[in-house]
Length: 519
Image (cartoon, rainbow, N blue to C red; front, side, top):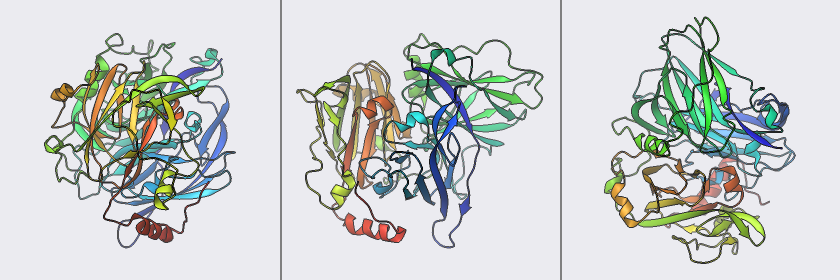
């Protein structure tokens, strides 16, 4: 039977840069997506690779640079790549989800072109359709600060990207004994930055390095208040950036561990090895235990402790000129309620506010651009509706430049994680129970972290605030692949009424040498 295990993969930093002589620089990548045979857990199986690598190469750029990625699809089915956390300012054409892009047919290529406007930090990419993320095709994204903006910490001695996640294998017998351990070589006394991405399917993972502190400094584009953690719960789709100092004696190696949270499991963990150059031997004893496993409030309290470093200079897309989001008047409120999978018209589906999203054959963005009627409806309810669940192509008619409050209520029995394309949002509150108007009294209105993916614990809620100044059609989705695949997503239509978006977009496509195509 199919079983699940957990892994840690190491990425080496690769990237080739070409600079323009005027304006913002360009960086170019050529990627070929194909199947290769690999053994993530010691069992040979087919995985999705990029340029022959699994995980894929790191995409690196600097704030305000233009990124051009030519993707050749050598799979036997269509593929789309989405850039998790990249805001594509004014350019939802390049978002890489079904509502904005046509999939790249087998044997075809497509060139993604976007600007990493006013962003810094650690992000990831992955295939967004046909459950392909379960087979690979993912990797890390690094957006560096411009030199003129100081970084709120010293320059580390090395940069290490780790992708962690859950993985299916053919037999439970192969879960633990065949894990292939990666090794990270370090020098005593030096400090390294670890960029850790949970690119898995559905499992929250606890990440830790034996006997070492994790100094959290950034998450998904936001510098954080610098705090030491002995471990961190990293939920599906989330990215964290830690500074780790090699301050141990180094008499032996140390475990790097990713262990599943909130699931009934065999306790199998993803494992890598931290190897000091002066190490005298292998890691002794068993893996370190997962911390606070019996305390259901531990993970939520840890999440609440992650706060924005409001004194750090950085790329900041907030048009208000400051991060005093707690003083901005909210214009729209949406309460989104999920449910466990249920049968709708004889099909097993997931929903938000009783609607399971149906992806039409024509992307929503094209339908909007060329005024193609009947593709979608701007009627998504802002509250749960007292009616049987339905399958529909219902879109949120969002307010351009509206300051919007979104409450995510999790009525499922597992942790659900939600991502909003095109934006960073402020995570202002989370708690167990049912959200009410009185719940706003516990909101963090000063230094809530801004990010693009947030967890919602079972039987709990999470509230976010977002300023919708980025025109386009943007995807709000469950990052848990099973929930997303079964329909737990919705799109926000954010239209600037003062600009002819059609004329602007056609100029962009002419400049890039592309024309949109229908399926």
